[in-house]
Length: 191
Image (tube, rainbow, N blue to C red; front, side, top):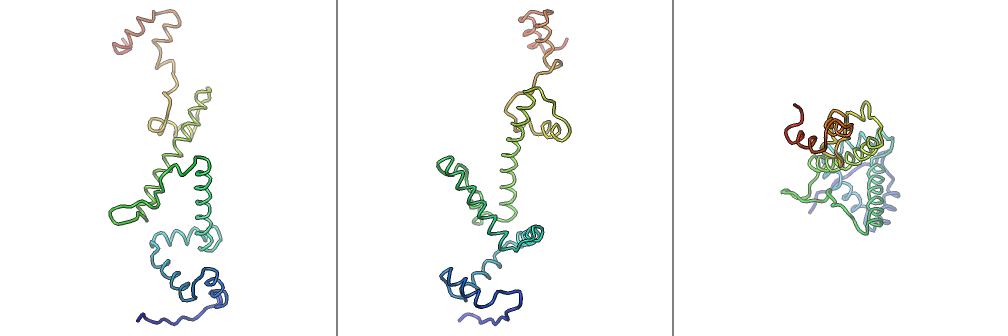
């Protein structure tokens, strides 16, 4: 037989009437409702719980609302992607399996972070490449980001500069034939 636990309802706790109504809506008993809540809490990753607690405090919402709204948002995003692409177009990394079962905690965070960083960096670099191709000069943080991540996430070759292409520019200015310019590049460029 399972251990019996007596609890005292505090002023911060929903009344038994509210618990009974919630249990009825979920098609379970009050006891099942309480046990389900306990099972959820004891299985939360400790670091996750602390982050959730801080996140909900920062947003000034209860934890249950933070969890619920984050999941609702994700479901809406998945549904929209599915409707646009005719099905989910990317794997649900949050339900991938590893050696110890479903990946979660730090491992899931790091994997999901890297995947989203790659996606966002590609998008930002594509926008920056468009600006550069239009002749705009990147400055400050945008230039630093571009210089750092364009080699990995970029889709276009760097914009030509006079220094990089001085042989062809010289050719176009009439100082060298095309064959001479190509031969010079094959020989290493500079004399």
